[in-house]
Length: 355
Image (tube, rainbow, N blue to C red; front, side, top):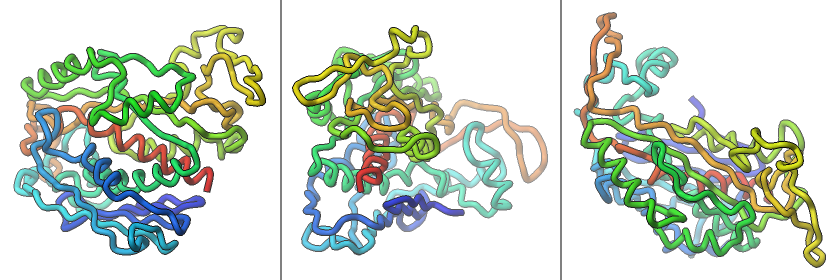
């Protein structure tokens, strides 16, 4: 099992949901970068569990302990290693899952691949819990990017089939600044309570729901990226699909495939000495390369597979069909807490691009 992504920067995540600790190692970061650790803590809180009925009841402080790579809040150039100690595990809730495979979860393919030795407690290394150190890494990346005038932000686009407003595809930093003031960001505040109601109804029905997250990067200059295998879309998709439960990534206008070319094409014009486009249906990327407009994409998140409603499955030990009701503490919807994770992965990708 490998959990390392490497290009210009290196990202290694480690740990398991019910192990002693989880963490991340970031390699090839620039030295001499002053970090605001209070801002990092705010980012960690956005993802932290146990804050309301829309998330798991598991309570973790997600306090980050720096092992190396930062001294006096300044990056040293050494690999940045950060650890988060787990403190609220209920491992007995998962005793049946060595034998009964959760539908929609990694249990069965992981059992086959690792010959039954994989840790199923809380999902082990497949758990969304492992996104906590990714949020830390992304918080560091965001601060480095901000010093270059590049900003990343996202909002909850949909829960089940209820939608927030889409981004104005030519958005500015002001929109991202508005979202930054919200723990669970939406553009249209009227839709927030409807999102909560949908999630709460699923929870009371012993079920779960998914949704979409829309993310944007503003301030990225034109000319970054490569065609084909090293396109910006390729790199972003690689990390975004690494987030547990992500099932789709789409760039630009969701309706671009239904347009005529004359509608889809983003016409260029000069704004002083700056080249801009009158629309941004391609989401800031053409030919795999940034064109100077905001990069805009959305990510589809599937419903949480661990639900307490009875489902058909198999008993791998006794080789028979059976049913399963998953007990324990699980999010009825992970979209709210995943928004900052999507931002983190985007920030890490863009940092790698401009490093």
